[in-house]
Image (cartoon, rainbow, N blue to C red; front, side, top):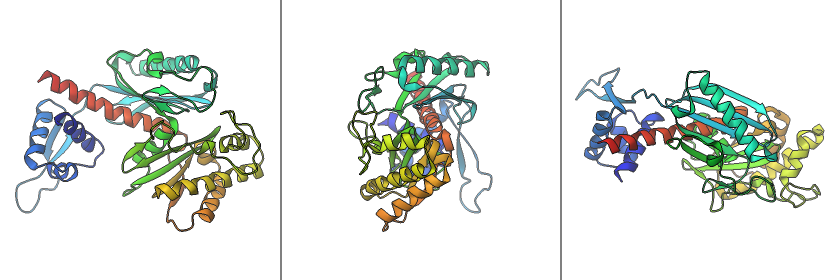
Length: 356
């Protein structure tokens, strides 16, 4: 219980949701004495600091503000899409200092894709005088469902089924590795970096080389029992006869994959199909925001308009903000970096507790 409270306190301060002990007590639901004890421990361990508020109150005792103490640890993120590998590194205060994205056929070989990511990660760290030993945590995205940090593609994807990216990356044992589906972390990236409060639920769809979807509900990524929650790419499209990578015909994923390199009319048809599928998902989720990301959702306004129009026709009763991804092609990468940052601070808290 105490370990969970410590993690929660650090996360709330890290995200800027809590600036005082009173904020923490209100958000966590614990007594002032319990919060005070946890804060005192974290201050004594050098993880939190308190300082006088910029504007002291007119009455009563002066309030103090909480902040994270600068930490030497570094954080990384790897984003593997069907056609790209992206890497970012930075410090534990959410400052990305190095970011790179290259074209790569990731589906062909898990070992090759992860070897390239490892090389890019090493190079990014070395440009700032760091090595992989400096990484406290890293977030990894893959364009397939993930269950218990193991890749479980839908259909046959030779070389990826059963892969455990954390093992292939061969990072130091002390580095925490988080592995998620890329659309799940795309949804998270948009939720924490771009969504305006008070957003409670968000649907994110990455459209480009296929379609992937992710859900954030009440501040948590919802992946489902088998890691396929939000995967609208394999919803059947009436009249579509295209062969999908999953082995079936008529999937939304196949239609969008062809549209990416096709005609404007095909692009609009794919947008309408995505919007119709999203309307079905929204009936169950009732989101505040629907975000279209990926190559098409981030860069093609006509695709977004077609999807939004179809969504409105199929689900006219909902008042939903429908938007292109505000982070563009970086949604999943920045979502992975954010999750890794949280785990890094959790690891720092645990390490401090063990030294007491």
